[in-house]
Image (cartoon, rainbow, N blue to C red; front, side, top):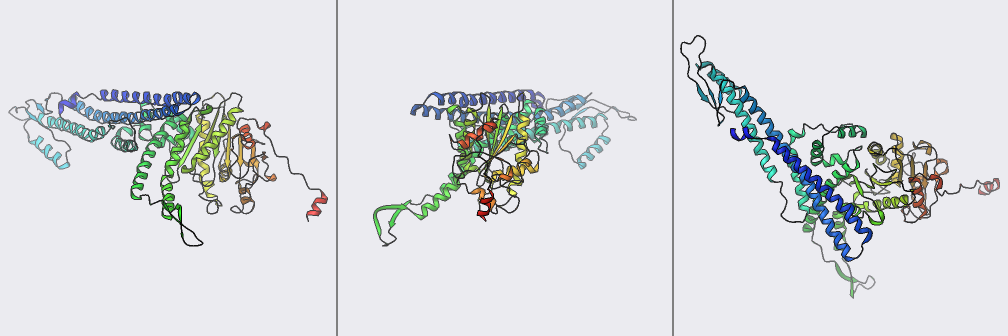
Length: 605
């Protein structure tokens, strides 16, 4: 970069452009939210049929476009601010060098002209001259320049050379910044079509990484989140940032922001939806690559009668090769299934009054993580947090999402106009199988701190005038984790509901860190999982809340088996909903077991 260009450079113009892109991103976000939560949701309430479904698909595509615009505008805004920051540093050096060059003239090409001068003791006045500086001096070159200045008859020569070198350093710094940023900014271009593809979202990931690397100096001016991960400290950090700093941190570190307990739910949702969209794009490309490497084999083959060993004409069955391929294909597609389930929940907003969904946590790494709320927990009068159990993972999250949806519907029906937010919390690594992993307690103790932080974060981010009523609902191994969370720290809940528990990590309800009488349990007919705890689930330490001595309120259930506790219209679900909205006195309880008479005791012996 030449002297004239840097001298005329105005960082504020790029900062203003960054503000413009940030504002454009906010407009796109508002448009996306309006399309999803007002227009599309309103249509779901009133319109049905093929035309309505076609319109919904178009609205979903439009919302995706707005989301893409929002995300890319955030990246562009950060890039412009980063470029302006680097260039402003170079310009400050240039301006300071020019200001210090008193008695000399800085020429349009960056050279410095010095006046005539005379050293003390010299008889003649030495002529003035012009010098051009060089950037990035070394100890050797600096020593040579000092030697030249001492030898030179004009005392102004050394000063002018110093000014010229400082100018050259500033120009080099500006040139380096321009060289670094030019390809990064040029890469921030979208396809010239109206379809946001998987490739587009992977490009966003690439763009973000490139800008984040180039903008390190600018981003270093933003104080990072506290390392202790305490929700209140996280909230204080966020509240201390400017709007520009918040936008930059979200655009460059969406996964980090989305995972910070204590931040507003709308902020976490915005960040996690960016992570979801990029992960969904990457997963789709990986799946497409898998399909190319593993072409589908012939599906149908002749059926051979096992009794006669002859081919039965006209009878076809799935081939062994196809069955194996299909299992592998489902495994390759599993993470996409989970992400699509989350998106489907977004798309259900407005259906039968279902409120907007908030993605409070997301990761596609390993078995995956997802925390999804029905309704904004920050403003809700009642919050429920559902913790799933063994085999829970991102690829299978649809069922867990639907359970929380059913809790919301039933609780909303019983809330007398108060607001409800029901949350699916898949924030831990659940055991993968019952016989292999579920007997071990480390899954519970590993996940317990994260649950406690999340519950504390709900307390921190709540904006209502009064504290919300919070219920933790857990199923299967999730009950074990909740018991471990009660042991590990302050379980920030008012009520606890266990369902199908194989055992928890406390000896009685009084140790669950909630008010007396606020521990509830459901055990359905035909649910064999509680017996795993009764008869050796991991050995000592798995206390069964279904047992009378545990001290939990035993709720009536009318469902069967291990997975029916959330069946629509069931008493099992209704009882949970009553607890969620603080109406425990209306819960239907099982009658206590009749004590044996002395005659029955003798007969049993």
